[in-house]
Each structure stands twice: as C-alpha cells, then as structure tokens.
Length: 196
Length: 248
Image (cartoon, each protein chain N blue to C red):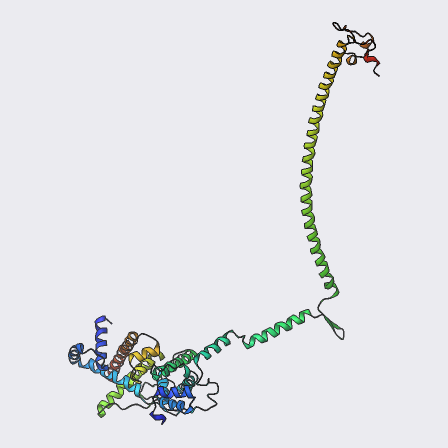
C-alpha cells in the first residue's frame, strides 16, 4: 500500500495523520541514496552514517515545514546539505576522500564501466584518475557533482536546494568539470611520462 | 586559460552531458573529430564522474528506533511552533545565569552579615567592627557639615550683597540729608531776612527808630546804638513801642 504512494503523499500522511509507517517508507525509499550522497560528499563512511541518521531525524522533526509544491528530493537534499555543512564546520578542515593513489578505494568497490578488457583497464585507470581529482575537491563541490550526476537533479532543482540562481549552478558545474579535466589531463600526462 | 578555450570547454562538456545547443552540435562534432585525443579525455572525464557518482557504497539500512525520535517534534506540529519555541529559548535566561544570580545573591548576603567567629585564639570579625562602625556616622556628619558650610557660604554671599545695598542707601540718605540741611538753612536765612524786612517796614510804619542791625553787631559796638529816624509816618498808637532790646 505504502509503496504505491508518492513521496508527497507519504509526507502528507505522516504530517497530517502522524502515520509512522509513512515515515518509515520515506526512510526506506531514500536511505541508500542519502547515505551514498553523504559518504561521497564527506568522503567518510562512518561520518556519513551518523549524518544520515541526523538527516532523517531532521526530516521527522521538521516534516511540518515541507512545502508539497517542491519536489521532496530538493527538500531532503537541502537538509542533507545543511547537515554536511554543519559537519564540515565541526570537522574544521576538509577531509579528503579516502581513495588511495593506486586506484583501490577504501570506501567503495570500483565500478566496471568498460566493455572490453583493454578498455576496462583504460577506463579503470581513467576512473582512478578522475576519483583522485574529485578527492581534491571541496565538500560543497563534490556535493554539487553528486546532485547533478548521482541524483540526476535538474539545474533548477539544484538551484532550489542550494538557494542559488540556476545559471550560477550551471556555471559552477561546468567550471568544476573543466577544472577536473585539466587535473585529469595533467595526471594522464604524468602517468604516460612515468610509464615511458 | 583564455576565453576561447573556456567557450570550447563548455561546448564540449555540454555535448557529452547532452545539454548542448543543437545549433552548435555540428561545429562541436567537427571539433571533436579534429582532436580525437582531447575528445576522448572529455568522454573519459564525464564517464569517470558518472561512475564515481553512481558507485555504490557499503550499505546498512537505517534503523530509527522510537528512542531516536523522542527528541524530535511530533509530525503534526507546524514549523511556527518551532520558531516560537526558538524565540522563547533565545530570550529565556540560560541555566548558567540562574547559577550566576544565586552566586551574586550569596555574595551580597555575606557582605551584609556581621558576625564574629572564634576558633581557639584566632578570631574572625566579619562585617562592621566598632572602629568601622564609628566611621560611618562620622562620614555622614562630615557630609552634613559640608552641606552646612555650603549653605553658610551662600548666606554670607547674600548678606554681603545686602550690606553693600544698605551702604549704598546710607550714602544716598547722607547726601539727601546734606542737601536738605543746606536747603533748610537757605530757606531759614531767606525767611529771617524777609521777617527782618517785614519788621523793619512795620517799624517804619510805626515811625519807630531802632538801632540798625543791633543784633548783628559786635557786642562791643552795641554800647552806643545808632538809631535811624523813621520819617513820613506817624505812630498810630502811643503805647505801641517796639524795642528789640526789651524782647528777652
């Protein structure tokens, strides 16, 4: 029954009727994505698990302030972004994503993207370089990439989450990617020089 | 990086992200064909970012127990209440302020106490001792005295002003008296002369002779009075005799 309802309907039931099962369904539906978002943005799985709980506690506490005219995801990830900001302030320093230089991740399993073994090797290598470049980004920058590429949110929705004009968000994403490309190209050049 | 390269970066990224303008597509594809290596870098970058973004993380489902939600507000409440409670919390005194107030009260109470504590030979006299107790009224008296001196100084100033005023009036009165005396003397002299002439005329009318200005003469010369005959008039009555020498 609950599975059939949209996020807005679930929130309405939870807020209007205090239906705990609606809240549980919301948690079940978004838990994995929120955790992934927090873990990749913060670069710390343990911290992300604590933050995830904090995010859903805030959802429970401030459910009454949710405006159904906006997508639930924008509201949820605004809360997640605020939780990240608070965490980052507490940490007092940027924490690098714990990815080792040899391409093995301490957090996540590498993802197989390449169709052929050769391409797979090249892609895995490229992927590592990209990850290494991403690891050097700020939490807020990684958050922006995740909103765009992981959650597939539109620039408008990201703008709503970050309370920034849409054009600014788009410009930031492009600037970030251009920066990553430069970093990535430099790394590739270095690797090739090293191999020779 | 120059502007042209910036624009190319944006165009190529937009192409790989599927956000490019269809008008630019032909041009972009031509550029990508011309520099395949760079194009491959862009492709790998986008793929790498997407792979990173979609990469799964070790997942354990979240368990939200009732205890976790105890601190959370019931879902039916609006955000206004939260705002109200936040405002109340902001203006309400913090817990430590109660402690501070209690400590201040205690210090105040102790400073008001007056007691003596004896432990063997040691003696603690807390509060006002006899000496310090005498200083307090003395201080009050000094203050009172100061006030009185100030009042006195003020009164003295007023008195000095009054004295100066009285002295002035005195001077004016003296001057008035001097002038009045001089005027009186003048009038008296004039009156005397007029009376003298009247008497003289009266005596002439009575044809009486009398020594001229006898009363004004030196007494030594008054032995042989000179008489002035009054002519042209006959005395009206025989017994009407006026002799100035018989006055007194």
